[in-house]
Amino acid sequence: MFYTQRRGRLRGREYWRCCSCELIQVPEQQRLTPDEEKAIYDFHENSPDDQRYRDFLARIAIPLQQQLAPEARGLDYGCGPGPTLPLMMTEAGFPCSVYDIYYAPHPERLRESYDYITCTEVIEHLGQPAQVIQQLVDCLVPGGHLAFMTKRRRDLEQFKGWSYRNDPTHISFFHINSFAWLAHHWQLDNVYTSDDAMIFRLPD
Image (cartoon, rainbow, N blue to C red):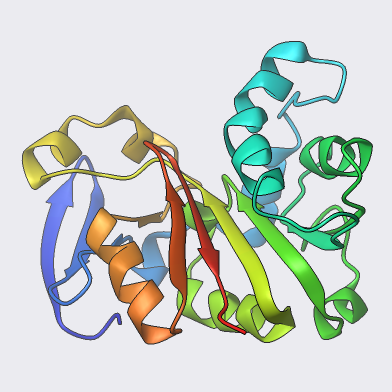
């Protein structure tokens, strides 16, 4: 997924584009350290009490809930310092555990099986997204759902002026073709697509 690449530079950071799947990544040597990254996340003020944040997450929560069987059990991967989507899913009758490398480091939860897994505003922060996606797919039961939320880039001209690119914690930028490659590689069915959300289903 990440081997055939073309190189470019914008405002001090290099960007490598995969010619197969259109993923763009910042090279490892130009990424933040884990401590630097966490220091930025610590300033995030996302909270379950913020209705605007709930409305934002509803863009993935509602279509996902419409795909699930009653009492489906899930995991929110990369929940951050103020887990809100897991609470929303649990309130709707779909119990949800949490995992986060910084704020909920429970590796044993990545050895369990789930009916659904959410990964919202997370994959753009991952240096090895293929490795993480494989891990998540391995945690899905047959017929399980994998839901992503991230802003997708369009063409390269749009990318050059894209403010989303300027966040130093954003190092992986997905194109619609990146998700098409992902679905083909892991043999997932795409059951929902919007501007910034995609839901896949692992066949039975």
